Length: 325
Image 1: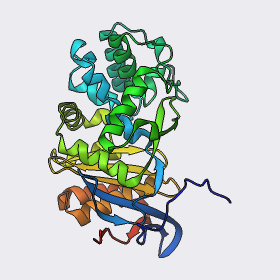
Image 2: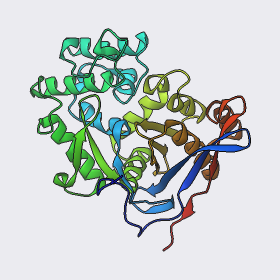
Image 3: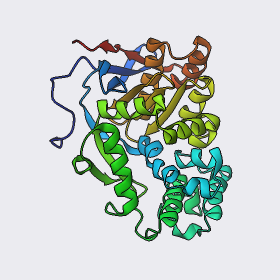
């Protein structure tokens, strides 16, 4: 199979990737290769496993940054969205009635009809409000209305809202916005193809909270982790156990991001084959190595994540290595 030229990376910043094995009894049944990087707020790679410049789409891990124009435009304040509203904007929620109601409340307060949502109706659902990205889309629409921008084309790459999102991302990464490479995510919104160290840098900025909007995003996600994912789901359960110290946001196809609040350190994880189970296993493995979570919290999450079924478990091999100077 020939992979696209952007898949993977050069070897100039490569160490041994992490490996996640699924073991049935004492036999290895499947293996996942995983790249991970830790960056500070200046973009310096502190630690890594695999390729720090591995390229991937950030997918839904972009949502906390896509919510920034909702705040900076004044739309959130005008409609008195509160922390719950902001958390659902950042979330990849489970589509429960509580999640759908929160997305609906955003639209109601902005005097917008749910029929304007351009995210799809999920399989087995009855409304786009149940789609896991409905909060993000509601925030997009509210921002566009506040700014007088078109509502019917809010997902187009040349729409003023998406141009502003890209401007903010480029500013955080220290590069021209026209260098960003975008593609359509499954919900219809643009997502970006970035290097892992760039994704980790974004989450380092988020954790540092040096900008007022990012501090608001952090507070909302930590105050309402149940709206960022859902009951029993990884991001929600991790943030509940982290006592306000870790922000966690995943993306599809094996992307997982973590941020150490107040320390300006970001972690980006990418599983080559896109496995969800592997990214969660690696996240816990790295949290143990970094000593970011209590032993009790780690044990509780490991029991949920690593034990797949009786006699079947995940094991992670390898470690982050310090960046050589």
